[in-house]
Image (tube, rainbow, N blue to C red; front, side, top):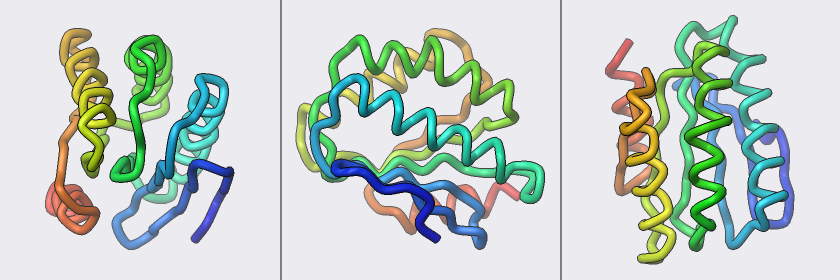
Length: 137
């Protein structure tokens, strides 16, 4: 079910997993990126009570590089709010673009350095990410 759409991204809900899938379709300015992630987090927190566990699935195959300040913002600001909301699982479908790939890995490194209670995994396709999460239940 589509929840939100903007020029460079879409948020969708899949109750069978359950997950919110954030699909990135190009470069987002810092403001667009943060607004998009905040909307996604709002939906995650809204859907969590009826699902128990819920996955944030970032489909970044078409995403390009995101500035370091944005990946740091996710680790410093978005992750703590997600954890407070009971979100502990994040999966990435890795970007085709080498620069986008570096942004995703920077986020994962920043999250690991903070010793967050966030389980971040990376996958080559959406179905593998969904299967990983469903197998955790």
